[in-house]
Image 1: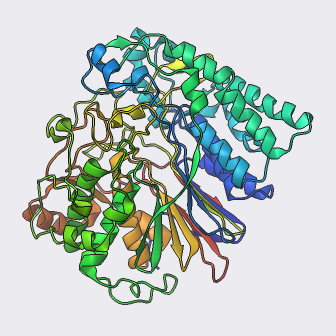
Image 2: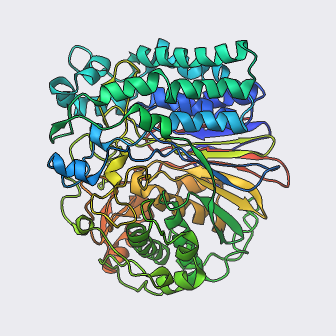
Image 3: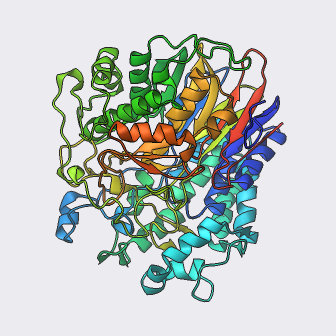
Length: 616
């Protein structure tokens, strides 16, 4: 028997895996009540906002992918809000800024997470919002034991809270210091907001409305009612932007009212006998499709490798597709450099004539890109020319120094380049007995991204830092357009039937770590837990999505469990390898369903000792 840090759970009723045990259990409770995977995901999502406030919040974002046995086409629900109408390059120039700050009111996109969760519940769920949000309301009102990482995050930004973000200090500091780990922490302002939102549902149902109309009543209270009004009023207040200027934001109630989560077709790629589903180019997901396509171009037909995961039967895995070998690691890292260069040139929501996923994943184009991978590590940023179009990179994206210079509020809370943990964002996967799978990566609106809004009990996000003030780029700052998010849930189908949902926190590393997991599981035949436990790695040899947006040419970060012989040979190939220790990278969650037997399975990440899978 192969040792794993935890068992791969199996059962027939339902499975949930997330980045916090309380969220997993809250979601499982919905399945026990007869709800489906959408009900469970929404319950978990709202609990994550409360118990991981340093990693996500109601003012953040939430891309979600859903498919089911009776409706197998994967659909993406976009909970990524756009840039406010007042967030123009001219406005930033007028206040002396040459880039979007990494935190503070001006970095705020329109909040999308709450709306997206409610649309998922309305369109795919079965239970009332009052039932589904009960656990989140309980933890906000009565408290939850504060995570050690949350305490450490509060401590890092304590001076900013005391000196400028005083509303955040009032909420998160105790006698001027961060609460100790394990302390019961409450957010009664958010509990009051939830009660007011749920009262709108109660009133609608009392007046004869059905379940869906009750949920829409909550959404109106959010987007056209007291929440939108409070957000606009608070946005007019001036606060310090990390270690930068003191300025007000530009978000208005009209911006909040104008946002509507959208259902979209997923971007897909056929790989090794599976179909991989991701968001469109407003997320980084298409880069994962490119990388898997490049690996398959180099490895040949992978459809018979690891074909029977349960029995471990299949052809030997080609070294180029095995991320435990020197050849496999080198190939994957070099493919990621190429895909991330394309991400910088072509992915985003800002161009009137975007290049599109079809051109980026065209087999001839991927074959040409894969042909650029040589025996030695590249230090160049090499975007391609899909469809013959000439690539363009932001001038500031070519900066190669200062990647570690961000202040404590900037960027997405994730694993640092040396493997030390600042925190992560969040993720949740759910599968139910009827064959529905949901994968969601909520983030943004964390307590260190923007000052606490005391009237509502939340902080706004800082996703606009992913947009460039330079115009004409795929991810230029354009009002009404979505920042190119790093949030990247994944759904996998076999023969047109959804079989796997997975994802991870980790900013620019999210899809890199997922590629390691998917190759181990889909191609190598490892179980869910074995693939999650496997040694992880990533590269930072491309422009970061987070302030100050620098790149580190040639740098590769790896867990030492890859083996010192492997790491040394990678160094010999020109990689600047940073040993991150044995258990530091990757935060995978995953659930699966075998359509032949109906058996459900789940696994969770042991790193950070926080993620948990539950099910029966």
